[in-house]
Structure formats: C-alpha cells, structure tokens
Amino acid sequence: MKGAAAETLRPEAAAIVIVDIQEKLLPVIAGREAILAGCRTLLHLASALELPVLLTTQYRKGLGPFLPELAELAGVEPVDKVAFSCFGSEAFRTQLGETGRKQLLVAGIESHICVTQTALGALDAGFSVHVLADAVGSRLEENHRIGLGRMERAGALISSVEMAAYELLGRADSPAFKSMLPHFR
Image (tube, rainbow, N blue to C red):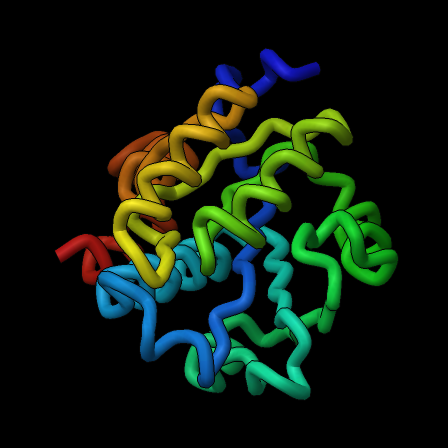
C-alpha cells in the first residue's frame, strides 16, 4: 500500500500524530516557533473535525514531558517510548489501531530521527503518511531537509499544515472551516 500517500485526505480516515515535542529538546530545534504554531493549528483542526490525536514522548525521564500547552490542547496523554519509531511502541500501535484510521498527518521532532522512523514504520504498516513539513524540525536545518527527502523517497507525501487542513475541510461554507479561519491568519 506504499502508493496510498497520493489519496485525498478524508476526515473519517485521518489521525494526527505529534512526535516528541518535549520541554528539554524543543529549545535547540531550528524554527521551533513555526513548528509550535503548526502543531497548535493541527490540534484546533483535530477539535473542529473530531480527528483522533496521538502524542508521544521519547524517554520522558531524560527529555522531559510533552510541552504542557500542546498536551492540554490535545486533551490526550502522551505515550512514552524508547524506540525512535512510534511503531516500536506497543502502546502507540494499540492506541492507533483503536482509532481505525489509515491516513496519518505527522508532525513533531526530530525530522531526521523519530519523525522519519515513525513515517517509515507507518508506511511499512500500510498507512498513508502525510508529513507536514512546516510542523516538523530538527536541531540542524540540513538534517530537517535530509529527513524530509528520505521520507518522500520512501513514499510519504510531504505537505504543509495549511494544505492538509484545507484538504480535510473541503469547503468554505462549513462550521468547521469557519471555526478554523482565525488559525489561518
């Protein structure tokens, strides 16, 4: 199902995965303010369209908790993991399986490590993967670009938060679209 990335995003099929936005790691990430803004918009979109959200932390004991502001907005408890890929966590796979969703919108850090390995794991498991380039990042911009390229070559669709949001919203006359307008300005 590696060609599935080309299918149109549909609210009933989509879930949001935000990887490792943690207090101790975030300060060294290039473009962190834009990444946080993108993640906030994604979480508002999740609320407007009732999309499931999965959050993860990488070794919470060492890298600290998921950013409280985003965790509160998501309203879900992050899954802690030690594998770099979210798919290396049984708890994550179980949570994701319970959603029944097959399209993943992926955001988080770091692009070239946990985000890439999660995208590869999702592709291997038959998911359609949309990596939101403006909501992922790394400590070094070069590693961010390399990670995006690797994921795209593997079959992930590289997109943006706004592109994915408008695709999921579908039309301008819906209450969900109207509720999202302030987050696009």
